[in-house]
Length: 241
Image 1: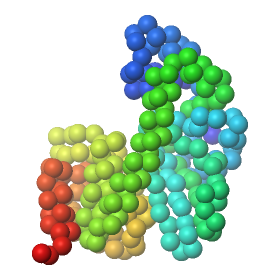
Image 2 (image 1 turned 90 degrees about the vertical axis):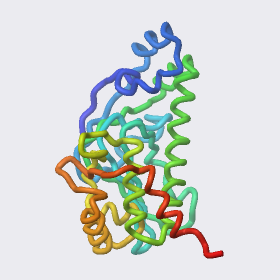
Image 3 (image 1 turned 120 degrees about the vertical axis):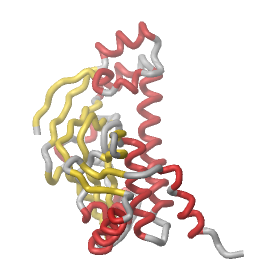
Protein backbone atom coordinates (compact mmCIF):
# COMPACT_ATOMS: atom_id res chain seq x y z
CA UNK A 1 0.00 0.00 0.00
CA UNK A 2 1.50 3.32 -1.10
CA UNK A 3 0.35 6.94 -0.95
CA UNK A 4 0.36 9.84 -3.39
CA UNK A 5 -1.40 13.21 -3.66
CA UNK A 6 -4.28 13.97 -6.00
CA UNK A 7 -6.64 16.82 -6.81
CA UNK A 8 -9.94 15.31 -5.77
CA UNK A 9 -12.12 17.21 -8.27
CA UNK A 10 -9.90 16.12 -11.14
CA UNK A 11 -10.04 12.50 -9.99
CA UNK A 12 -13.82 12.69 -9.39
CA UNK A 13 -15.22 15.57 -11.50
CA UNK A 14 -18.85 14.89 -10.56
CA UNK A 15 -18.19 16.28 -7.07
CA UNK A 16 -17.75 19.74 -8.58
CA UNK A 17 -20.90 19.81 -10.70
CA UNK A 18 -22.66 22.24 -8.36
CA UNK A 19 -19.88 24.83 -8.43
CA UNK A 20 -19.84 28.00 -10.51
CA UNK A 21 -17.03 28.05 -13.12
CA UNK A 22 -14.84 30.46 -11.12
CA UNK A 23 -15.33 28.41 -7.94
CA UNK A 24 -14.58 25.17 -9.75
CA UNK A 25 -11.17 26.35 -10.88
CA UNK A 26 -10.18 27.37 -7.33
CA UNK A 27 -11.60 24.21 -5.82
CA UNK A 28 -9.68 22.01 -8.24
CA UNK A 29 -6.40 23.42 -6.94
CA UNK A 30 -7.34 23.62 -3.26
CA UNK A 31 -9.12 20.32 -2.65
CA UNK A 32 -6.17 17.97 -2.45
CA UNK A 33 -6.04 14.66 -0.62
CA UNK A 34 -3.62 11.82 -0.03
CA UNK A 35 -4.41 8.74 -2.08
CA UNK A 36 -3.82 5.18 -0.93
CA UNK A 37 -2.94 2.57 -3.52
CA UNK A 38 -4.52 -0.74 -2.48
CA UNK A 39 -3.38 -4.06 -3.89
CA UNK A 40 -5.69 -7.04 -4.35
CA UNK A 41 -6.29 -9.29 -1.37
CA UNK A 42 -7.34 -8.84 2.23
CA UNK A 43 -7.29 -5.26 3.48
CA UNK A 44 -7.06 -4.05 7.06
CA UNK A 45 -8.69 -0.60 7.33
CA UNK A 46 -7.05 -0.10 10.71
CA UNK A 47 -4.13 1.22 8.68
CA UNK A 48 -6.13 4.45 8.37
CA UNK A 49 -7.30 5.73 11.76
CA UNK A 50 -10.61 7.59 11.97
CA UNK A 51 -9.10 10.94 13.02
CA UNK A 52 -6.90 10.86 9.93
CA UNK A 53 -9.95 10.94 7.64
CA UNK A 54 -12.98 12.47 9.38
CA UNK A 55 -14.89 12.67 6.09
CA UNK A 56 -14.00 9.09 5.24
CA UNK A 57 -12.33 7.46 2.25
CA UNK A 58 -13.44 8.20 -1.31
CA UNK A 59 -12.98 5.37 -3.80
CA UNK A 60 -11.46 6.80 -6.98
CA UNK A 61 -11.19 3.54 -8.90
CA UNK A 62 -10.97 -0.19 -8.36
CA UNK A 63 -13.33 -2.53 -6.51
CA UNK A 64 -13.54 -3.33 -2.81
CA UNK A 65 -15.68 -5.90 -1.02
CA UNK A 66 -17.12 -5.61 2.47
CA UNK A 67 -18.14 -8.98 3.89
CA UNK A 68 -20.38 -9.03 6.94
CA UNK A 69 -20.76 -12.40 8.65
CA UNK A 70 -23.13 -13.70 11.29
CA UNK A 71 -22.23 -17.23 12.23
CA UNK A 72 -21.95 -19.24 9.01
CA UNK A 73 -23.89 -16.73 6.91
CA UNK A 74 -22.26 -13.86 5.02
CA UNK A 75 -23.34 -10.90 2.93
CA UNK A 76 -21.16 -8.92 0.55
CA UNK A 77 -21.31 -5.25 -0.34
CA UNK A 78 -19.56 -4.14 -3.53
CA UNK A 79 -17.90 -0.72 -3.46
CA UNK A 80 -16.43 1.09 -6.42
CA UNK A 81 -15.60 4.49 -7.86
CA UNK A 82 -17.55 7.28 -6.18
CA UNK A 83 -18.35 5.43 -2.97
CA UNK A 84 -17.44 6.87 0.42
CA UNK A 85 -16.63 4.53 3.28
CA UNK A 86 -15.66 4.76 6.90
CA UNK A 87 -14.35 1.23 7.51
CA UNK A 88 -13.25 1.96 11.06
CA UNK A 89 -16.88 2.43 12.17
CA UNK A 90 -17.41 -0.89 13.93
CA UNK A 91 -20.64 -2.77 13.29
CA UNK A 92 -20.60 -3.69 16.98
CA UNK A 93 -21.41 -0.04 17.74
CA UNK A 94 -24.86 -0.37 16.13
CA UNK A 95 -25.68 -3.97 17.02
CA UNK A 96 -24.93 -6.41 19.83
CA UNK A 97 -25.09 -9.32 17.40
CA UNK A 98 -21.79 -11.20 16.95
CA UNK A 99 -21.04 -9.64 13.57
CA UNK A 100 -17.68 -9.97 11.87
CA UNK A 101 -16.59 -7.55 9.13
CA UNK A 102 -13.86 -8.32 6.63
CA UNK A 103 -12.57 -6.07 3.86
CA UNK A 104 -10.82 -7.11 0.68
CA UNK A 105 -9.65 -5.51 -2.54
CA UNK A 106 -11.08 -7.32 -5.57
CA UNK A 107 -9.36 -5.13 -8.16
CA UNK A 108 -6.47 -2.73 -7.47
CA UNK A 109 -7.97 0.41 -6.01
CA UNK A 110 -7.14 4.01 -5.17
CA UNK A 111 -8.90 5.70 -2.27
CA UNK A 112 -8.60 9.38 -1.34
CA UNK A 113 -8.13 10.08 2.37
CA UNK A 114 -10.48 12.99 3.10
CA UNK A 115 -8.57 14.32 6.10
CA UNK A 116 -9.12 17.28 8.43
CA UNK A 117 -7.36 19.67 6.04
CA UNK A 118 -9.58 18.56 3.18
CA UNK A 119 -12.68 18.98 5.36
CA UNK A 120 -11.69 22.48 6.42
CA UNK A 121 -11.05 23.53 2.81
CA UNK A 122 -14.25 21.87 1.57
CA UNK A 123 -16.36 23.94 3.97
CA UNK A 124 -15.71 26.91 1.67
CA UNK A 125 -17.51 24.98 -1.09
CA UNK A 126 -20.93 23.89 0.23
CA UNK A 127 -21.83 22.30 -3.11
CA UNK A 128 -18.92 19.86 -2.72
CA UNK A 129 -19.96 19.02 0.84
CA UNK A 130 -23.52 18.44 -0.39
CA UNK A 131 -22.19 16.14 -3.10
CA UNK A 132 -20.18 14.14 -0.57
CA UNK A 133 -23.21 13.77 1.68
CA UNK A 134 -25.20 12.70 -1.36
CA UNK A 135 -22.66 9.96 -2.03
CA UNK A 136 -23.13 8.65 1.50
CA UNK A 137 -26.90 8.65 1.08
CA UNK A 138 -26.59 6.92 -2.30
CA UNK A 139 -24.71 4.05 -0.70
CA UNK A 140 -27.55 3.55 1.79
CA UNK A 141 -30.11 3.64 -1.04
CA UNK A 142 -28.12 1.01 -2.90
CA UNK A 143 -28.25 -1.23 0.19
CA UNK A 144 -32.04 -0.76 0.22
CA UNK A 145 -32.17 -1.91 -3.41
CA UNK A 146 -30.22 -5.02 -2.41
CA UNK A 147 -32.73 -5.78 0.33
CA UNK A 148 -35.56 -5.69 -2.20
CA UNK A 149 -33.71 -7.78 -4.79
CA UNK A 150 -32.83 -10.40 -2.20
CA UNK A 151 -36.53 -10.85 -1.39
CA UNK A 152 -37.07 -12.44 -4.81
CA UNK A 153 -37.65 -16.16 -4.60
CA UNK A 154 -35.97 -17.24 -7.81
CA UNK A 155 -32.21 -17.15 -7.67
CA UNK A 156 -31.80 -16.34 -11.37
CA UNK A 157 -34.00 -13.24 -10.84
CA UNK A 158 -31.92 -12.12 -7.85
CA UNK A 159 -28.65 -12.68 -9.64
CA UNK A 160 -29.60 -10.94 -12.86
CA UNK A 161 -31.21 -7.92 -11.18
CA UNK A 162 -28.25 -7.55 -8.80
CA UNK A 163 -25.86 -7.45 -11.77
CA UNK A 164 -28.03 -4.93 -13.62
CA UNK A 165 -28.08 -2.79 -10.47
CA UNK A 166 -24.27 -2.84 -10.49
CA UNK A 167 -24.36 -1.98 -14.19
CA UNK A 168 -26.45 1.11 -13.49
CA UNK A 169 -23.58 2.50 -11.45
CA UNK A 170 -20.45 1.13 -13.07
CA UNK A 171 -21.50 -0.53 -16.30
CA UNK A 172 -20.08 0.27 -19.74
CA UNK A 173 -22.10 0.00 -22.92
CA UNK A 174 -20.37 -2.14 -25.56
CA UNK A 175 -21.47 -3.34 -29.01
CA UNK A 176 -22.35 -6.71 -27.46
CA UNK A 177 -24.14 -5.58 -24.31
CA UNK A 178 -23.52 -3.81 -21.00
CA UNK A 179 -20.30 -4.80 -19.28
CA UNK A 180 -19.98 -4.86 -15.50
CA UNK A 181 -16.17 -4.50 -15.26
CA UNK A 182 -15.80 -6.43 -12.04
CA UNK A 183 -14.11 -9.79 -11.60
CA UNK A 184 -16.78 -11.06 -9.22
CA UNK A 185 -16.34 -14.75 -8.48
CA UNK A 186 -19.25 -17.16 -8.07
CA UNK A 187 -18.60 -17.11 -4.31
CA UNK A 188 -18.76 -13.30 -4.16
CA UNK A 189 -21.96 -13.29 -6.22
CA UNK A 190 -23.43 -15.90 -3.88
CA UNK A 191 -22.79 -13.66 -0.88
CA UNK A 192 -24.16 -10.69 -2.81
CA UNK A 193 -27.54 -12.34 -3.44
CA UNK A 194 -27.77 -14.50 -0.31
CA UNK A 195 -27.30 -17.92 -1.87
CA UNK A 196 -24.96 -20.90 -1.93
CA UNK A 197 -22.12 -20.94 -4.43
CA UNK A 198 -23.17 -24.19 -6.20
CA UNK A 199 -26.67 -22.78 -6.70
CA UNK A 200 -25.23 -19.57 -8.15
CA UNK A 201 -23.01 -21.55 -10.52
CA UNK A 202 -26.08 -23.43 -11.74
CA UNK A 203 -28.11 -20.21 -12.13
CA UNK A 204 -25.29 -18.59 -14.10
CA UNK A 205 -25.27 -21.57 -16.45
CA UNK A 206 -29.03 -21.22 -16.99
CA UNK A 207 -28.76 -17.46 -17.62
CA UNK A 208 -25.87 -17.96 -20.03
CA UNK A 209 -27.84 -20.61 -21.92
CA UNK A 210 -30.75 -18.16 -22.15
CA UNK A 211 -28.38 -15.51 -23.56
CA UNK A 212 -28.94 -13.14 -20.65
CA UNK A 213 -25.36 -12.88 -19.42
CA UNK A 214 -21.86 -13.95 -20.32
CA UNK A 215 -18.62 -14.17 -18.38
CA UNK A 216 -15.74 -12.35 -20.07
CA UNK A 217 -12.13 -11.68 -19.15
CA UNK A 218 -13.17 -8.12 -18.17
CA UNK A 219 -16.15 -9.01 -15.98
CA UNK A 220 -19.81 -9.84 -16.64
CA UNK A 221 -21.53 -8.96 -19.92
CA UNK A 222 -25.28 -8.39 -19.60
CA UNK A 223 -27.33 -9.07 -22.71
CA UNK A 224 -30.76 -7.87 -23.72
CA UNK A 225 -32.85 -4.92 -22.58
CA UNK A 226 -33.09 -4.28 -18.82
CA UNK A 227 -36.43 -2.50 -19.32
CA UNK A 228 -38.09 -5.88 -19.79
CA UNK A 229 -36.55 -7.53 -16.74
CA UNK A 230 -39.12 -6.47 -14.18
CA UNK A 231 -42.15 -7.72 -16.14
CA UNK A 232 -41.66 -11.47 -15.57
CA UNK A 233 -40.38 -10.83 -12.06
CA UNK A 234 -43.46 -8.77 -11.21
CA UNK A 235 -45.69 -11.48 -12.67
CA UNK A 236 -44.09 -14.07 -10.41
CA UNK A 237 -44.42 -11.83 -7.36
CA UNK A 238 -48.06 -10.91 -8.02
CA UNK A 239 -50.31 -12.70 -5.54
CA UNK A 240 -53.28 -14.64 -6.96
CA UNK A 241 -56.64 -12.85 -6.85
